[in-house]
Structures are given as structure tokens and as C-alpha cells.
Image 1 (spheres, chains in turn cyan, green):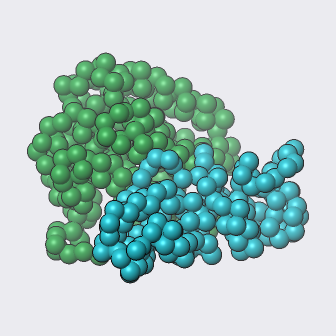
Image 2: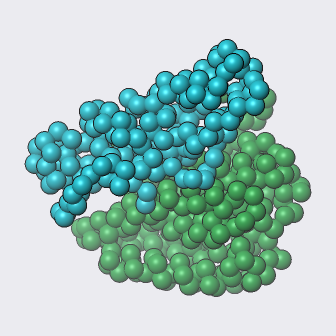
Image 3: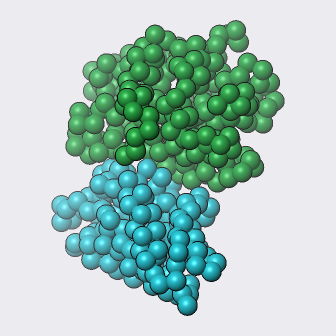
Length: 162
Length: 254
């Protein structure tokens, strides 16, 4: 008998094609419903123009559909709640940071100090807070380009909600 | 399709979606040509945003009127498009014209999405709220270009001012309702004059910061323009180009 936990397990393994984390870690999954052998997965888009969305939808349909006891799997894109980087799990944040992509701080990130500086975004390479936005539009729809004045490196930052 | 075109709310949604479709289509011409690498990425991303925003709105209409969103985007006659004249004006690959045109329309779209975000029909409000976040990033980015070039060199200032002078006369036409029967107090139009006043106040702040000026007035009420499907001749060519692939094989899929 297939269970919601089985589906969750499969979703945990569906990667974002453009980032080294899963769609669950990224916070895209907002609901999993199971009625008999029919599964419905509700997802929120990070950014509406992200070209990875159809690939993610296809991966979810195929991989959940292959579970024993599942006859069909549908994917429903939702707009409420809106995705924000706050939805990225602590584990996902750690993986992104190791990949050179920073994330906006939030209450859920476990940060215990308030940073009172011109930029609250630390460089993932040298840790300096002497950083600035280079462009709000980075290599993917969800990332902005920042520049570290200390080590003179560009790095990517998950765009906060405007 | 005719049911949709006769519906007042649908026309309001269409006017925003059609603005986005045409802007995204025309602006993608800049991919590979923007003045710096970062901006090449940004300009392409914004064109991509505009097309996805159009799709999110066409999907809402598609569900409401049982239509294929691609059919709404590509299978209408030119006179059934509700985009304003400003979005279709060719920029002749002049960066100042491109920035000013996008800035004028992006600030209008932002205000329009604010209004749509309050709508309770289906999930239109949720869709608009989602788009508004992305739209605000565009406006912030374009505000920076306005000040960067307005306060740049004498040449950049003059070219920006020239672009503003050239496009200002079409900017007021953005506020024309798509349906002549829409009255001033329709909530989704929120009154043409009220919308215009709010918009003009917002752009005035950026113009001051940029050291630029613009004289923009609302058009005569008898003027229809693009919002009513009375498009300029260049729109016919743009429409033909936009729909060419779809019409070559309507049943195909990507």
C-alpha cells in the first residue's frame, strides 16, 4: 500500500535542474494528496518565468507515477502561498552556500545576531560583508548577482521578495 | 473566443497580458545586444518575465472561458489585441528608447497588477500578487537605469530626454480602458484619472532623481488607439511575426 510518506520520499529526490538541491529543500512542494492510486502534487513556482518548471513537473509526474500502487499523478501549480527564499530549508541553505549561492537571512535560518552593516549579505568565499548588488538578474530567474569588494569575487544570491 | 472578448473583466486582464506579450516579444530582440554583459542577462530575463506574466494571465482567462492559452495569445485577429500603442513602438535599437519605453510601461503594469491583486474572481488576485513581486524587481531595476543614464554624461542625458520627448505622447494612451463602455467607477479600472494621477506621482520621483522631465497628459476620450484594437501599421507586421510559427503548424507541440 503506497503512502504519503512514500511520495514525500520520491519528491525529496527530485532535483531542481539548475541548483544542487531538491524541490522539497527549495520549498516548492506545498501539498501532497493521495486518493486510492491517484496522487496530486501541489507546487509553487519560484519565479513564473523559470524554464525549469516544465522539467520539474515532468520529473514529479514520472517519478511519483512509477511508485508501486500509483496509477496516475497530477501536478497542480499554485500561486498562494507565493514562494519566497524563506521557504528554503536549513539543509537546502547549507547546500546552496557550499555551491557559492547565498540566501537571505530569515528567522528560520537560525541566525542569532543582527548584522548592522551596509550589506547584510556575507560573501560565500571570504565572509566579508563589504558586498553590493551587481544586478538583480542572475543566471537563473531566482538568483541575483552580487559583488564582494573585499575579495573581488562575484557571487550569486537567492533573490528576496521585493 | 467571442465570449471572452465581450467580457469586461476579460478585457482588463487582456490589456495587461497583451502589453506583456508584445513587450516580451519585441524586447527579446535585445538578447545578445545590450550594452553590458550583466544587462544582456537582465534584459533577456525581463523579456522572459513579460512572456511568463502574459501566460499566467492568459491561463486565468483560458480556465474561465475554456480556451487554450496559446490560442488566446496567437489566434486572435490584430483588432482583438488590447495592447497599448506604447509597447509596440519600435525602439530602432536605441538603448535610451528601450529603457524609457520599458520604464513607462513597467510602472504602469505594476500599478495595474496592484489593482488586479485585489480581485476576487477565481485565483486572479493570487496570480496578480505573484506577478507583482517580479514586476517590482523590474521597476526597481529600470529606475536605476533611468538615474544612471539621466545623470550619466551630457550625451546620455540628452538621449534619455529625447526618448522621453518622443514617447511621452503615447504614454497617456496606456490609461485608456479597453472597452469604451467601461465607466469611470468600475473597480478594476479604478477610474482612469485616479490611476493616472497615482502613476504620474510615482514616475515623477524617478524623473526628479534622474534630472529628466516629461509632459504626459491623458488623451481625448474620443481617441481609441491600441487598447480598442485600433493599432498602428507596424503592429500588423509585429503580429504577423509573433504568430508566424504557430500558424505554420497550429497542432504542433514543443
